[in-house]
Image (cartoon, rainbow, N blue to C red; front, side):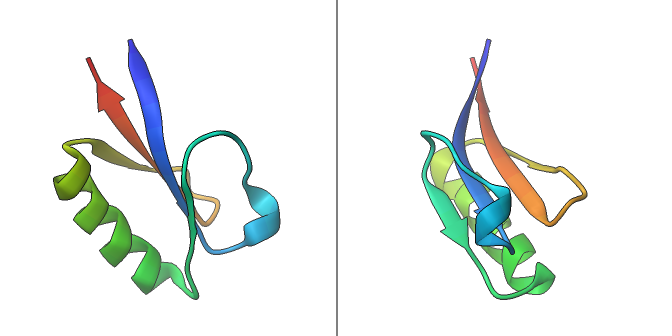
Length: 59
């Protein structure tokens, strides 16, 4: 089972839900923040190829 623990997106209107959502200004910042959160949260970052990355904790 896996759980989405965070979402990092460029466009605020493209995301929603119960996980923490981080809105960034561009793709470069999205990647930097996602990879930092990946280490901090001990999760895996997945690029959805639509300006959004999700961080998933696999159990």
